[in-house]
Amino acid sequence: MAKGMTVAEKIFSSKCGREIGAGEVVMAPIDAAMIHDITGPLAITQFREMGGERVFDPEKIILLFDHQIPADSIPAAKNHVMMRAFAEEQGIKNYDLREGVCHQVALEKGRVAPGDIVVGSDSHTCMYGAVGAFATGIGSTDMGFALKFGALYFRVPESIRVDATGVFGKRVGPKDLILRMAGDIGADGATYRALEFGGSTFSSMEMSGRMTCCNMAIEMGGKAGIVPHDEITLKYLKGRGSFDPIDLTPDSDAIYLEKRAYDISDLSPQVAVPHNVDNVVPVEEVAGQKVDQVFIGSCTNGRFEDMQEAAEVLGNDSFSEKVRVIIIPASRDEYLKTLRAGLIERFVEAGALVEAPCCGPCMGGAFGLLAPGEVSLSTSNRNFRGRQGSTEAEVYLSSPATAAASALYGEITDPRGV
Image (tube, rainbow, N blue to C red; front, side, top):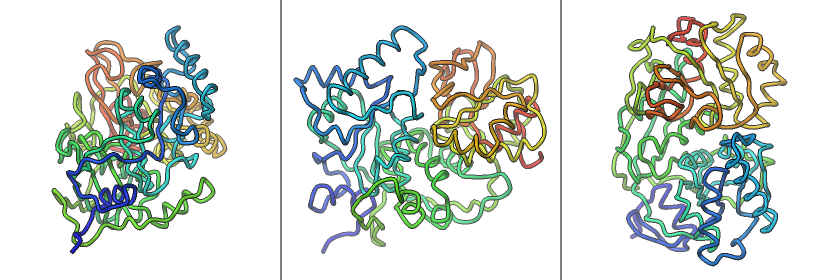
């Protein structure tokens, strides 16, 4: 008698044409492979060194620039030239620097579908699990192999089931939930596991919030973060692409390594404190901490809904003159939504710098770097030492609401009191 399966097991079983269980090592076909301007050049070099002449399928490769755009150095410019030439040679659609952050663009362009197996040479590729895909980050050597052969060896991961119930309180949302989970599970508590999200909170959560939560699965060591697709997913994907329906509902007798449950009704705004993502406390514990820079954006929280959240807290006020406020929508589409809603004008009037879609300060690569002794509050996903500049700076992580409230006063502030 066949045993029940988790979502991850169902995806691998579907792609491999037989029942696959956690722990098995399989060579699985790749539905999409994503490379960007930081990791792409090395992947292409590996592809060449493996004797690669033609990629396995140019239609299944997602290529764009988002980390160092426009080019902020000669080496970056050379990388861009190399990737443009590769895209033209191989017949790959190159989004170049026109569209925005890789993970947001891959989803909104319909390049990922429920039940897909997707790899990206970026650790936050797990965000694509928001549409019910098994998506994971890989190294550039593995990506070189995937570009050539269109397949990759995987050890099918065990799953941790996380159910959330209840309704978010005022100015509390998905970012607070996933930060709380990171604090509970730990930075390595889900290493090489699939985090399978469910419960009434996730079934009613819009795609923006699901993307936020799946994005940060890697911050617990997760191989993937997955929300099984439903009507909300299908509504989001409508008009973005076509795919064959697949039942990804986990079986009632599926075997999980661990099960966790959250009632979010009393959840307060959460903040990750330097220098680890799992060093998470309620906002009340760090309220009053002076900040020099606030960054609202990134693949974690750069969608229109995040901009709305920040604008609602801002109201008709202005940001503190003691804080550098950098706001970056994650893609051209999200930028245009924000623009047409009048929010970019409101942010600029309030004293913010609104930049074109890119990763921005998130990895401290292009601009918005911190000096020694400075403090940043960011809606991004990592606060490791040196992540946004000096190793002597400090980075705190929060939701857009908490970030906006803190930008008003120049110190970490509970958004519920604004």
